[in-house]
Length: 227
Image 1 (cartoon, rainbow, N blue to C red):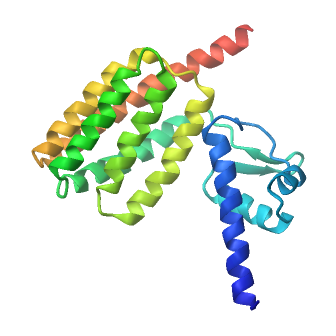
Image 2: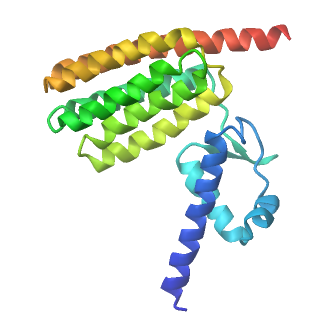
């Protein structure tokens, strides 16, 4: 096997390991502050430690893990300021995404957005966490419709970070009906191919979402201090 071929194989294994860790973060197997043990991961996945270290570098570049000199590699912990900044950046990119999508969206794609939003509404009472997943799916789908691969790639990273936030902040179902209504406003603007209107509604949606999430984190931290 040539050096180039070996490099490709190593990169492929590293990405596989990185995806496994991403999945564990997204499904709450790994939580904020958890240590990721290199030796255990190597045995679990039956791979050498070299691609694992490369996977750690990939995830560090995405902001999903950090290297602590005293502890090792841990899942990133996110505070209130981090959340606000995350949503500020996401809000700007989501506006750009929906503005672009308005120029390309088809009736079939609009129906897909309506279906995702309807699923989010239906599971609001019985499964708030599942509703949260549909919320992110809604925004991921719009990003795909933007016809801008770079924008879609950057939003994918921010969506993963958003899932991390929601991993340690209990989801409050009272916000879901309002989010669904805000989604409807966005869909209606997209249906009319009104790019500026869709962008405006996305901005409103993120302003309200940011305030709601900030309030939830403050309440969550306050409850922790009382225990």
